[in-house]
Length: 267
Image (cartoon, rainbow, N blue to C red; front, top):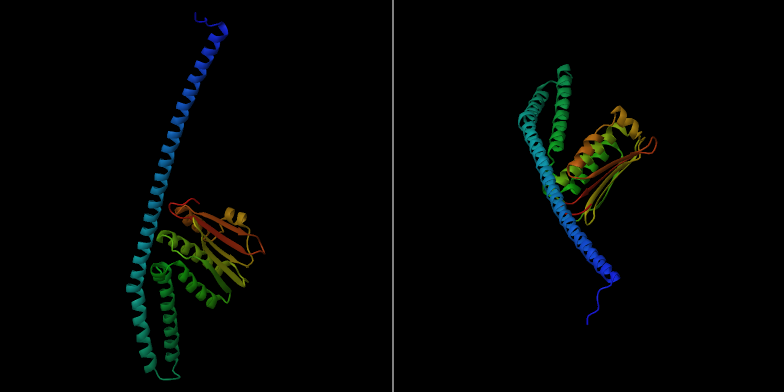
């Protein structure tokens, strides 16, 4: 004869049943939560890819416009200046020596020659052909050499950059680098050294531009908007999902730092 369930046995069976039911509910909710997390990650990943594509398209459009302007400057301004320069040279050779007109022509020739040089610099700034063909590091080397000759400031470049990044990232890095040098020319009076470093690790690219000039109060500059091209540099970095930082104090120089995660990598 089978034993009858006691009250304790019935309670235990009821408790076990409720426990199993709660565990099943918890497992089902956990599974739904994991599925939603995966779906959300997929949406975020897709969103990130869309933002990167939009950033690349934006930068490409900006660079295309810059290239068009550079071509227009070359065809409509530089060529005309070169023609004027040649005509002035002819006029200079035909003007008698010692004549005041010769002095005027010589001054005009020098001014036109300077204008041609500045026009070519503007064209290079708008669309540097070295960037497309050789990459950002050779372009930095070229520009730092010109910067050192023009300013007398010792400029050094340290590069650990074996594999080129996508073009839109190189464009942003170059534009930030160029703007940093421009700020040093304008504001870092008394600077004797500029150090530039670009480093590509497995998942990001880091750029640093540092000078030993007089420095400035970053907070005060931001409040008074006397901050040069710093906001422009920050905006460029953010377009490609990068981080931008400026460090400076009066009497301690200034350092611009940018870090950009590579597409498909975590940063």
